[in-house]
Length: 195
Image (cartoon, rainbow, N blue to C red; front, side, top):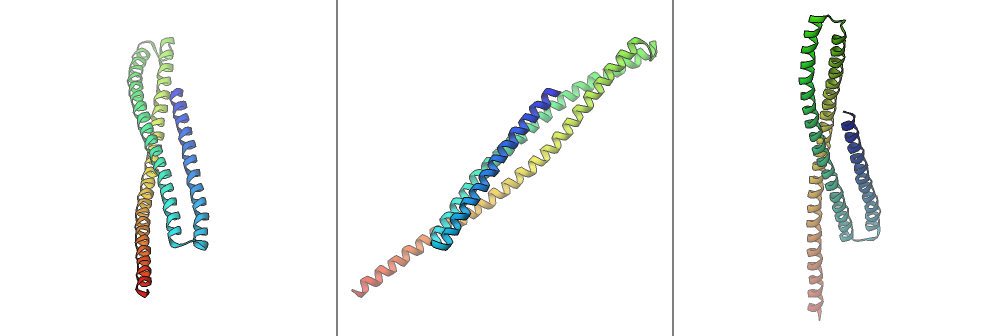
Protein backbone atom coordinates (compact mmCIF):
# COMPACT_ATOMS: atom_id res chain seq x y z
CA UNK A 1 0.00 0.00 0.00
CA UNK A 2 2.76 2.46 0.83
CA UNK A 3 4.18 2.15 -2.70
CA UNK A 4 0.85 3.26 -4.11
CA UNK A 5 0.72 6.22 -1.72
CA UNK A 6 4.20 7.34 -2.70
CA UNK A 7 3.32 7.11 -6.40
CA UNK A 8 0.07 9.03 -5.88
CA UNK A 9 1.89 11.62 -3.77
CA UNK A 10 4.63 12.06 -6.36
CA UNK A 11 2.07 12.31 -9.13
CA UNK A 12 0.12 14.84 -7.11
CA UNK A 13 3.26 16.82 -6.33
CA UNK A 14 4.25 16.90 -10.01
CA UNK A 15 0.72 17.94 -10.96
CA UNK A 16 0.82 20.80 -8.43
CA UNK A 17 4.21 21.92 -9.71
CA UNK A 18 2.96 21.99 -13.31
CA UNK A 19 -0.27 23.79 -12.36
CA UNK A 20 1.71 26.40 -10.43
CA UNK A 21 3.91 26.96 -13.49
CA UNK A 22 0.91 27.44 -15.80
CA UNK A 23 -0.75 29.77 -13.27
CA UNK A 24 2.48 31.76 -13.02
CA UNK A 25 2.57 32.05 -16.82
CA UNK A 26 -1.03 33.30 -16.86
CA UNK A 27 -0.23 35.98 -14.28
CA UNK A 28 2.85 37.02 -16.26
CA UNK A 29 0.86 37.29 -19.50
CA UNK A 30 -1.83 39.35 -17.75
CA UNK A 31 0.79 41.64 -16.26
CA UNK A 32 2.68 42.14 -19.52
CA UNK A 33 -0.49 42.72 -21.49
CA UNK A 34 -1.77 45.11 -18.83
CA UNK A 35 1.27 47.32 -19.31
CA UNK A 36 0.97 47.09 -23.10
CA UNK A 37 -2.76 47.87 -22.94
CA UNK A 38 -2.10 50.95 -20.80
CA UNK A 39 0.54 52.16 -23.27
CA UNK A 40 -1.86 51.56 -26.18
CA UNK A 41 -4.64 53.47 -24.41
CA UNK A 42 -2.38 56.40 -23.65
CA UNK A 43 -0.31 56.55 -26.81
CA UNK A 44 -1.79 54.17 -29.39
CA UNK A 45 -4.75 53.72 -31.63
CA UNK A 46 -7.84 51.57 -31.23
CA UNK A 47 -6.14 49.12 -33.58
CA UNK A 48 -3.17 48.90 -31.19
CA UNK A 49 -5.49 48.28 -28.24
CA UNK A 50 -7.33 45.53 -30.09
CA UNK A 51 -4.06 43.88 -31.14
CA UNK A 52 -2.87 43.84 -27.52
CA UNK A 53 -6.14 42.35 -26.33
CA UNK A 54 -5.89 39.76 -29.11
CA UNK A 55 -2.36 38.81 -28.02
CA UNK A 56 -3.43 38.55 -24.38
CA UNK A 57 -6.41 36.32 -25.16
CA UNK A 58 -4.30 34.10 -27.42
CA UNK A 59 -1.68 33.68 -24.69
CA UNK A 60 -4.35 33.00 -22.07
CA UNK A 61 -5.95 30.37 -24.30
CA UNK A 62 -2.61 28.63 -24.77
CA UNK A 63 -2.02 28.54 -21.01
CA UNK A 64 -5.59 27.45 -20.29
CA UNK A 65 -5.31 24.65 -22.84
CA UNK A 66 -2.17 23.49 -21.02
CA UNK A 67 -4.13 23.64 -17.77
CA UNK A 68 -6.96 21.66 -19.33
CA UNK A 69 -4.52 18.94 -20.43
CA UNK A 70 -3.05 18.78 -16.93
CA UNK A 71 -6.52 18.39 -15.42
CA UNK A 72 -7.40 15.68 -17.93
CA UNK A 73 -4.18 13.80 -17.15
CA UNK A 74 -4.82 14.18 -13.41
CA UNK A 75 -8.34 12.80 -13.78
CA UNK A 76 -7.07 9.84 -15.81
CA UNK A 77 -4.42 9.16 -13.16
CA UNK A 78 -6.97 9.34 -10.34
CA UNK A 79 -9.36 7.01 -12.18
CA UNK A 80 -6.52 4.54 -12.72
CA UNK A 81 -5.55 4.70 -9.04
CA UNK A 82 -9.15 4.20 -7.97
CA UNK A 83 -9.49 1.11 -10.17
CA UNK A 84 -6.25 -0.37 -8.80
CA UNK A 85 -7.35 0.32 -5.24
CA UNK A 86 -10.76 -1.26 -5.87
CA UNK A 87 -9.13 -4.44 -7.20
CA UNK A 88 -6.81 -4.50 -4.20
CA UNK A 89 -9.74 -3.98 -1.83
CA UNK A 90 -11.68 -6.82 -3.50
CA UNK A 91 -8.70 -9.15 -3.08
CA UNK A 92 -8.28 -8.07 0.54
CA UNK A 93 -12.02 -8.60 1.10
CA UNK A 94 -11.79 -12.20 -0.09
CA UNK A 95 -8.72 -12.85 2.07
CA UNK A 96 -10.42 -11.17 5.03
CA UNK A 97 -13.56 -13.29 4.63
CA UNK A 98 -11.42 -16.43 4.47
CA UNK A 99 -9.39 -15.34 7.53
CA UNK A 100 -12.62 -14.66 9.48
CA UNK A 101 -13.99 -18.07 8.53
CA UNK A 102 -10.77 -19.86 9.56
CA UNK A 103 -10.56 -17.92 12.81
CA UNK A 104 -14.17 -18.77 13.68
CA UNK A 105 -13.58 -22.46 12.99
CA UNK A 106 -10.29 -22.69 14.88
CA UNK A 107 -11.42 -20.61 17.85
CA UNK A 108 -14.54 -22.77 18.13
CA UNK A 109 -12.50 -25.97 17.97
CA UNK A 110 -9.48 -24.95 20.08
CA UNK A 111 -10.68 -21.90 21.98
CA UNK A 112 -9.93 -18.21 21.50
CA UNK A 113 -6.81 -18.37 23.66
CA UNK A 114 -5.09 -21.16 21.73
CA UNK A 115 -1.87 -20.30 19.91
CA UNK A 116 -3.40 -21.04 16.50
CA UNK A 117 -6.45 -18.86 17.23
CA UNK A 118 -4.23 -15.97 18.30
CA UNK A 119 -2.21 -16.20 15.07
CA UNK A 120 -5.38 -16.30 12.97
CA UNK A 121 -6.85 -13.36 14.87
CA UNK A 122 -3.68 -11.36 14.30
CA UNK A 123 -3.78 -12.17 10.56
CA UNK A 124 -7.50 -11.28 10.42
CA UNK A 125 -6.87 -7.97 12.19
CA UNK A 126 -3.99 -7.07 9.82
CA UNK A 127 -6.20 -7.81 6.83
CA UNK A 128 -9.01 -5.70 8.32
CA UNK A 129 -6.63 -2.75 8.77
CA UNK A 130 -5.35 -3.09 5.19
CA UNK A 131 -8.93 -3.36 3.89
CA UNK A 132 -10.01 -0.25 5.81
CA UNK A 133 -6.93 1.65 4.66
CA UNK A 134 -7.63 0.77 1.04
CA UNK A 135 -11.29 1.78 1.39
CA UNK A 136 -10.19 5.12 2.85
CA UNK A 137 -7.75 5.61 -0.03
CA UNK A 138 -10.56 4.99 -2.55
CA UNK A 139 -12.76 7.50 -0.73
CA UNK A 140 -9.96 10.10 -0.70
CA UNK A 141 -9.22 9.58 -4.39
CA UNK A 142 -12.93 9.92 -5.22
CA UNK A 143 -12.95 13.29 -3.45
CA UNK A 144 -9.82 14.35 -5.36
CA UNK A 145 -11.50 13.18 -8.57
CA UNK A 146 -14.57 15.34 -7.85
CA UNK A 147 -12.36 18.36 -7.15
CA UNK A 148 -10.32 17.76 -10.31
CA UNK A 149 -13.48 17.42 -12.39
CA UNK A 150 -14.82 20.72 -11.03
CA UNK A 151 -11.52 22.43 -11.87
CA UNK A 152 -11.57 20.85 -15.34
CA UNK A 153 -15.10 22.14 -15.93
CA UNK A 154 -14.18 25.63 -14.72
CA UNK A 155 -11.13 25.67 -16.99
CA UNK A 156 -13.29 24.60 -19.93
CA UNK A 157 -15.75 27.44 -19.16
CA UNK A 158 -12.89 29.95 -19.09
CA UNK A 159 -11.55 28.62 -22.38
CA UNK A 160 -14.96 28.97 -24.01
CA UNK A 161 -15.33 32.54 -22.71
CA UNK A 162 -11.87 33.52 -23.93
CA UNK A 163 -12.44 31.86 -27.30
CA UNK A 164 -15.62 33.89 -27.69
CA UNK A 165 -13.86 37.08 -26.62
CA UNK A 166 -11.05 36.37 -29.10
CA UNK A 167 -13.58 35.84 -31.89
CA UNK A 168 -15.17 39.18 -31.01
CA UNK A 169 -11.78 40.93 -30.95
CA UNK A 170 -10.86 39.39 -34.31
CA UNK A 171 -14.16 40.67 -35.77
CA UNK A 172 -13.46 44.14 -34.36
CA UNK A 173 -9.96 44.11 -35.81
CA UNK A 174 -11.31 43.01 -39.17
CA UNK A 175 -14.05 45.67 -39.10
CA UNK A 176 -11.55 48.28 -37.94
CA UNK A 177 -9.26 47.48 -40.86
CA UNK A 178 -12.16 47.65 -43.30
CA UNK A 179 -13.31 50.97 -41.80
CA UNK A 180 -9.79 52.37 -42.01
CA UNK A 181 -9.46 51.19 -45.61
CA UNK A 182 -12.83 52.76 -46.51
CA UNK A 183 -11.75 55.99 -44.79
CA UNK A 184 -8.53 56.03 -46.82
CA UNK A 185 -10.47 55.44 -50.03
CA UNK A 186 -12.77 58.33 -49.13
CA UNK A 187 -9.75 60.61 -48.60
CA UNK A 188 -8.20 59.53 -51.89
CA UNK A 189 -11.52 60.02 -53.66
CA UNK A 190 -11.93 63.48 -52.10
CA UNK A 191 -8.41 64.46 -52.99
CA UNK A 192 -8.75 63.26 -56.58
CA UNK A 193 -12.10 65.06 -56.90
CA UNK A 194 -10.48 68.38 -55.90
CA UNK A 195 -7.80 68.12 -58.56
